[in-house]
Image 1 (cartoon, one colour):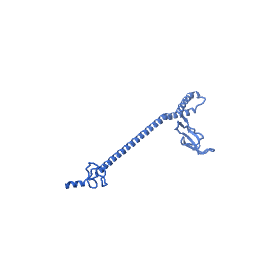
Image 2: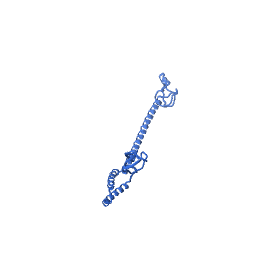
Image 3: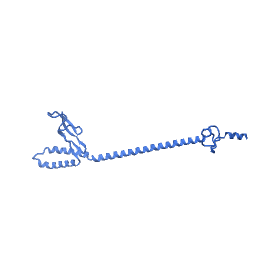
Image 4: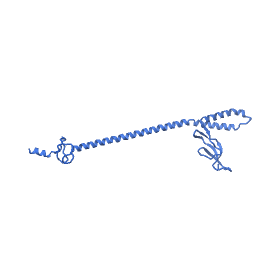
Amino acid sequence: MKHKEEIKEETCNCGCGCNCGEECTCGDECNCNEECNCGKECKCHEEKSHHHDKHKEKIEKLENELKEEKEKSLRIQAEMMNFRRRQEESLATFKKYANEDILKELLLIKDNFERGLSLESEENKEIFKGFRMIYQNIDKILEENQVIEINAIDVPFDPAIHQAVMTEHRDGTEPGMVIDCLQKGYKYKDRVLRPAMVKVSE
């Protein structure tokens, strides 16, 4: 009997009816999952709290990983959109200036015709008639492709459209003015196809 009474005294008397069977942190045996009358938490509650914290940490880790994957996916999508845009712009530029190399070659032919037509006279006028027709056809092709001549006489020198190959002092002319054009320059749409080769006043 004495042994049974000792066990009874050691049992926590919180009386909540839990059968956890763990020991209260006060040292008595507790059969609840809340707090013992001593004011301290039962071990079973501490274990559940610890398990809950670990579960919460795992969820937070998974949420962070999911957030990182979403951000990575958005970056990839943005990079793909930028790549597609650059490709479309590059293709559009290629189409816009697709005839650039051919038109440059055509300008050289036009230069030769102009030099030849400068020798036209009354005696050879009939012979040059066919040459002039070809020259006019070349001009028409250039015009249809939006190739226009650059103004290169009596204008301020502009390195963006002029190429200075000679300088000369000329009375009554301000320095930096184009005073002679040695080879015509042309623009192709909004791009310089060939700069004008000029002489500039000094």
